[in-house]
Length: 158
Image (cartoon, rainbow, N blue to C red):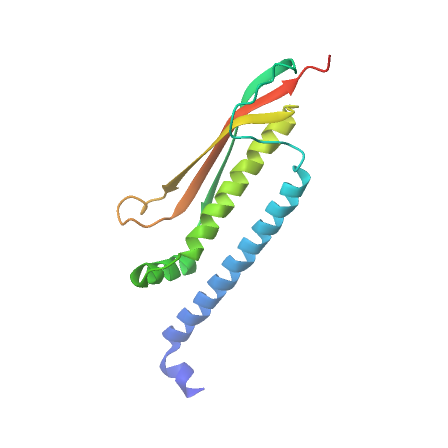
């Protein structure tokens, strides 16, 4: 008990770091669960990255659809990434950040296409960018933005 009284700042820091890690992990798991559920719901909405010959199917409507997501990294994972950059190797915290942003952007693209009554999305493209105050100055990533866009096609029912 005496050690707590000698170093209260250290224990407050450790408590807040553990709380931040726990909250960040919990939030990330909830987001992944939401992504998996929505991916299962939108499984029937095809999205292709190339053009397809639709000469046999008349197209009734074509429209540009987009989906974007900005996902931020928590401070604890940023600290782990900084340590990983010192020693080298895979930076898993950034990998999950980019994966979540990419999958969320594609899901939002599919939801936009579905809401417009589209049957398929063709020529889907995906762009990512690091954003935030420190993204360009100190070469640190604060948030990742992913934008998915493509052409939503609705086929004629004739």
